[in-house]
Image (tube, rainbow, N blue to C red; front, side, top):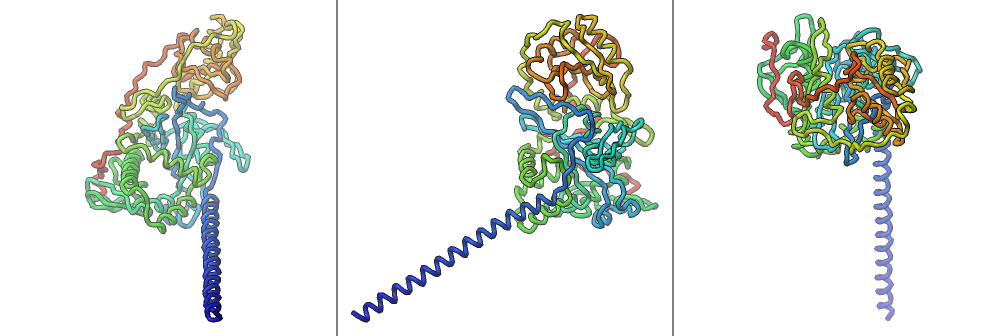
Length: 506
């Protein structure tokens, strides 16, 4: 019995040891899991802290948000800004130009990304950096410094120096009338990191190219004829190349950037995910360090959610375009076809010609709440454009026209003229919708141009650039085709190849 008891006690002792070991192991495992979770949370916070923020729009006049379609959906507009900032040694090394180290950065790449309301198609509009525009008054939120509106037209890339990316957004909204939801600004090092993480982006040239002049200008890009997978510094050289592509202009560079982006999207879709944790971590570090975004994109989760929406669009429904333009000396300016392209984006019309118009709001006629003579109407002069100053006296002329038609409470808004591509009637709340519709009908303005907006306090008629003269309003005849001068490039076109200037072959 004694031996048996000792045996039982031995088993009990072993079991006790096992329990202690298991308990210790479980506690250790729990601690490890908890530590990992905490480390993950701390790393997430670290990445969020890397992301720099700036105000979305520094201008006084903001484009109204689009009206939801019948399904309650609205498009999403994102402005991508490529900064030439050389404020770090890494960026200076990549970008050259030592004399500009620490100087005022320029927005040398500007692309508006439009994701349709139904999320089926995506359009991109590039604006050449040397486009002549009127930069609006912008207030630097950090210093409080007021940058006055430009006197005459200046290059659009200067907008970044007027308080930050929020002034570039304000400049785009003034020129296009397109409401911008977010912006993302990336510097040179960020482009290099992205290309490295992907493992290379295939690009094509129709001849050998060396982007270098006898005076030392050029990106330094050197490629053999055909397709090459570029990454790192070579990818940045491709995106910055002017000398060597076509006519050596910023327009050719924009085309090369479109080819690169389309190819990068195809690569990301083909590889699905980045399976190497080390590369993924490096990408996360470098990308967040090189990004400046508006407050609506200030966390990794928000950026991921945005990327998740964008990636759902198939390459064949992606259209890259360049703003139609004409030369003014060595610079360019928007053309009438540019204004058509901007309208297509505003009205959410797919640039690939396949989507048709967005679903329009129900558009029911709502009875006016007041008699014509009791409807208060403010008339604003929005007849200016990115190239033309507002026509003088338009607010007063149209207000007088309304008074003559029985709207005796119509008055001209004495504030400074703005830019509105098409004439619109805005109202702030549902109880004034019928009044706004009544004003529009009296002038022959189509129901689609009656918009609800929180930017106005009462019924407001904005006389647009499409009504710079005459008393009768003639709604512009809609041409919903993408202008040929926009040089549309489909995202699925993997045969696109850049034309090399013969003077830059080797």
